[in-house]
Amino acid sequence: MNTTAPQDLQISTPTDTTIVLTRTFNAPRRLVWEAMFTPDRMRRWMQPPPGWTLTTCECDARVGGKLSVAWKSDEANPAMTLRGEFTEVALYEHAVHTETMAMGSGQTVGSLVEKHQFADQGAATAMSITQTYDSKEDRDGALASGMDQGMEACYQSLDALLGERSQGNAAVNAR
Amino acid sequence: MVLDRSPRLDLVFHALAHPARRAIIRQLSGGERNLSALAAPLRMTFPAATKHVRVLEHAKLVRRRVEGRQHFCRLEAAPLKEATLWTESFRQHWEARFEALDSLLDEMKSEERARARRT
Image 1 (cartoon, helix red, strand yellow):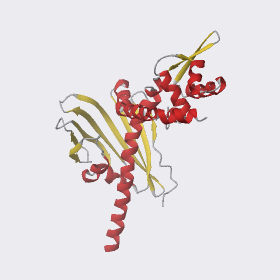
Image 2 (cartoon, each protein chain N blue to C red; image 1 turned 180 degrees about the horizontal axis):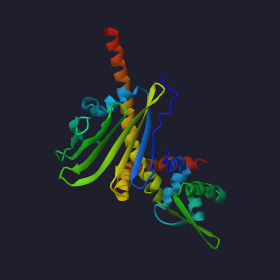
Image 3 (tube, helix red, strand yellow; image 1 turned 60 degrees about the vertical axis):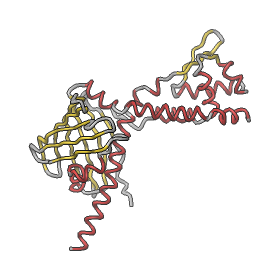
Image 4 (cartoon, rainbow over the protein chains, first blue to last red; image 1 turned 135 degrees about the vertical axis):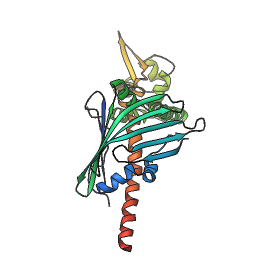
């Protein structure tokens, strides 16, 4: 049975360089932590963009521990890598790690510091992820990432709707 | 600032949900038209066409300018490019991840219960 806990994802931008994501999960803190930072579990939710495959997924959530994720695509291996290091860890409570994303060519596309916080909410867990970017431009770039796909999806649905024009006109003419 | 579920997008889809309004958009994709020219092929009265144009305007899909007694309409691609929408895919990306996390957590809870029963 679902809890009535507010599960909706909240996204806010409290400062020019941050994005805060907050979401409640219907599980205790320990399990949410495990799901977030255990490689075998991470593979389940780190969904790659269509056509990409996750090739590397390493995560050692201890101070000084490394984070390393790589994806390959049909064109490139790796297509993208994500590397970071844990700088602050309080088990089941909070973890801070750096994160640098690079394209297959090695070109860095952005770096940030990510802080995960876990708080009990009855039997559920409220998790917040605070991403801090180097600049407002980087932050805005991250918010807009995937916009192309989003845009494409919008245009496609617009195309699909417009494609119904023969039916549409028939309906209008029937009036 | 809190980026809520995009109400703008709801307006856009609501606006596109009517065949007459899709027909208007299709006509406008050929360029600016005046309102009477839009109404004619739809076999609509002028007020009925105006009503639909207002819905499209509200969703910011169409912009209207008045010149004397003429009302000119043109397509506005902006809502498909603009602010509220550009964060939508960021949200969808994380929502998808977190939904996967939800089912993973359900499985992990069942695993734990199964383990607890065995011990």
